[in-house]
Amino acid sequence: MKIIDQHYLNGRFTTSNGKEEMEILNPANGKLIGKVTFGNESDIQAAIGYASAALPSFARTTKEERMEYLQRLHDAVMARVEDLQEATTDEYGATVQRSLWSNKYAAETFLYFKEILRDFDFERKIGKSKISLVPVGVTAIMTAWNANSGSISVKVAAAIAAGCTVVIKPSEMSAIQSQILAECFDAAGLPPGVINMVHGRGDVLGNILATHPAVGKILFTGSTVVGKIIARNAVDTMKRVTLELSGKSPNIILDDADLKTAIPMAVNSGFMNNGQACIAGTRLLVPEPLLPEVKRLILEHVATLKVGDPHDEQTAIGPLASCKQFERIQHYIQVGLDEGAELLVGGLGKPEGLQDGFYVKPTVFTGVTNDMTIAREEIFGPVLSVLTYKTEEEAIAIANDTIYGLHAYVSSSDMARAQRVADQINAGRVAINTLYHDALAPFGGFKQSGIGREGGIYGLEEQLEAKVIIS
Image 1 (cartoon, rainbow, N blue to C red):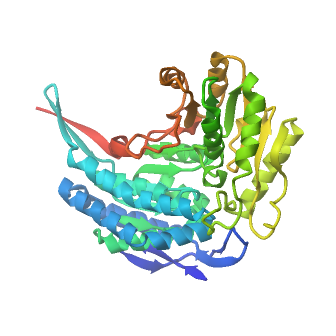
Image 2 (cartoon, one colour; image 1 turned 120 degrees about the horizontal axis):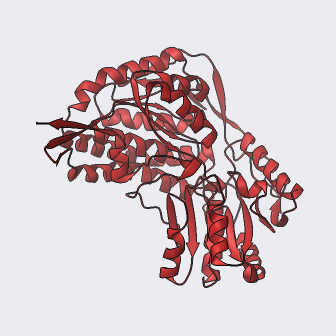
């Protein structure tokens, strides 16, 4: 059993001053696999103090020095990638394929930012002025539990590239994974105080990070509800914020799409990461005349998806992250039934033979209208809503009829037509005939899916302030 009772502060592991403990359960079987001791106010205050003390000298490091630090961070994470993979599967329930990919991606993120730095100019001339791009300051990083290593690493990499110091408050549900990451950061040998990590509750530590005058920037991934709280708390000290929040992504199947390719891809987009993905394409929009064929292909593909032990390489969908998540998904499935959606496959309860873990039946509703709860709210589980449309214009209108705008998908055999549709969708990203993730492109959302961007050069620039010197 893993006992996590230390935080990473000022280049060393320090016993928590907090006393509150939380049990960590393996979602595949509900068994106890660890305990984490939460930090308290004094722990997070200490972390902020160390980051503040380290900032002046770290902000003056050269681009070449920071490129070396990013290389070291990559190497340290890659050295522990198998440990991270195991922890991600045991603590979160990700399939072994997903957990390996996600942790390799986390390591590679540091190399992406190293390469961005190589040609990045921190000084520019505009008119008679010199523009200096300087670090925004101490950066608070708060992340969700569904993509732990990648979400932390993309934020840390941008901050380090810019010359900022960081305080990380990872999800308390990811303590084992986060502790291994902290060990990687320690092994990379950055100056003390540059990277700090404190485990604990968001409503305790997050509030301090969002209001502390020494924190200059907040990078947050999580729900829109929590993002709004953070933004409200941050405004009194005018902190810069980058918020990557909820989504309810539309997936438009145009009438010229190759359905034998598009429908399996659409199901996969809705069920990716056990359905626990902010970019999941959970609103599937199909031409009304094609619905019978779409339903047949959905049933055919869902039948091939094995639900079960995430350590089994044949498993496509593992358990949800917690009992709370399981209950949340059951609630939404019941709401879908109550509001009159037609259950195509799945439904309430656990799959046969999987009673011990937090498993749900991959569920698809048809007959869904865009005013139904299951079409409007982020469910965060393997639940797909199928809607129909009559015209291309109606499909675009339905896609945009949401408070969110994080991601969208379009399938078509006519790339020019697909591009025209994509141009009209209000989302931070639109993928045409693919589920590919471009790590160098900016990631973030329109509307209530967030503020700002992370990843690539846009993520680096979000960590910088422009100082104008006129002479």
